[in-house]
Image (tube, rainbow, N blue to C red; front, top):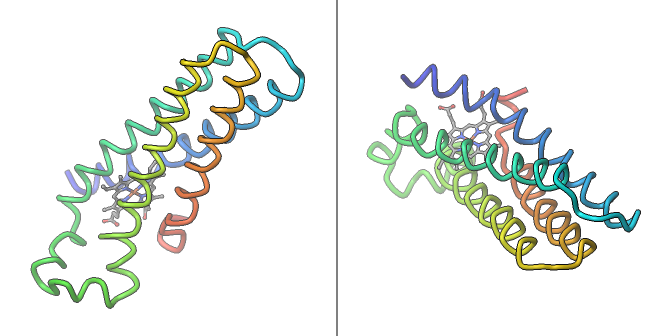
Length: 144
Ligand code: HEM
């Protein structure tokens, strides 16, 4: 169960980052060209939202089945003093949950706008902030 989830979480991350970059580039290009926010733009942004939510769900389950989780009972609050345990048990999960909250806010805020330029801007800005947070706390050394 752990190995399968870790593999899925690891590969799904490529898809999440890729689709978010596509959605952000699409949003800023749409904004600068002044075109209407159409069905294709909606689909790309929705994919970004869905893919990141799926990663959140996988991550939440992985958190409790990962051997990292056992460190809570072994080290207690000592996990905060070690950079690696702090990254896996605290920083990565909390930052990524915040990132997905921002992405979700961008999605809901774009729906409330009537002007296409504002729709593109909400998606572009909030997805970018979310992506920056995700990139800031990925365990790069174990992933790549
Ligand atoms: C879109 C959001 C997320 C992305 C892009 C992401 C990405 C990653 C990546 C690339 C790794 C390294 C995988 C490897 O070493 O092969 C990882 C590990 C991990 N992630 Fe996430 N993650 C996300 C959200 C979450 C969330 C929300 C949680 C928990 C609540 C979580 C829990 C974990 C855990 C526990 C590991 C370590 C697995 C292990 O080595 O045992 N992730 N994540």
